[in-house]
Length: 176
Length: 202
Image (cartoon, rainbow over all chains, first blue to last red):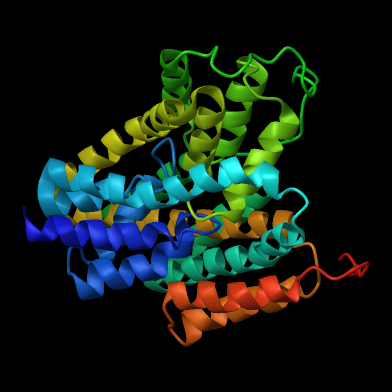
């Protein structure tokens, strides 16, 4: 077996457990492991895959298949998806069946209320580390601020705004 | 992500199919459709309108309870919900079919993106477009963070744990795992069960 496949399984199985609150929670670790440690993708590639992944339908971390593809083709993509979704899948499956039985357990609420702010913090931390990579010039900052403002004030589809981002990037390139 | 129940949703226990009556093919097609159409995040709203409103496989209280499990546990909301609903409808095979179906469309698309990227990423025009996409995506993830915060931060002292988490990851560059375990354990202990003691709401 290709040793890289084993590394993919180890890395994405581990990242799976960090996605508390959403995929973004694992982003800082995703970057460290795939870019700095294993050199599977560059920081720029990772950011691009993640960003395009926000336009794809379904769970918003399907971009992991793109990384798997870059490392080891079809098999890589398959291995990464299974490694990324199986650990948390099994936990959810088990806890889901237990949850009702835990109804009167006082720690159930403590865990739920305690982890809520930590998951918000992890998502925020992931967003910050992504922003540090991306917001390098005035145009990028303006696009990000506009998208943030529009999403908080209107009910516009985010995929449409990301498409607009692509268009603005293209126009800026032509005008340069 | 509008989770407010409209009137056409079934009330608790109202004519829901008994477990085992929904076929695996029905589960597969419903989740495949959600996986193919939920463009632009907000997959929770798509899940609800399919599972609660259209198919009436689960009622709103069950949906909300499953969502709160999904949000507390590691894993994405979309895939955790697929497992919980699939298990509820058809046990282990139901959960497997649901998670595969919801991941399939987006996974195939991103696989294609990975291949195409290898061929075209050297072109400066493509890079410029990707920079615009990435900047917009930063706006999106920040908006998602703000919305999640507005929904799930209930107490004033929650902000302490948000701050500790961000400082641990972004300032001290600690591993996400250590921050999750450390701050998580502290926060759960902070909210430990205490007889009749209520924190002031925000």
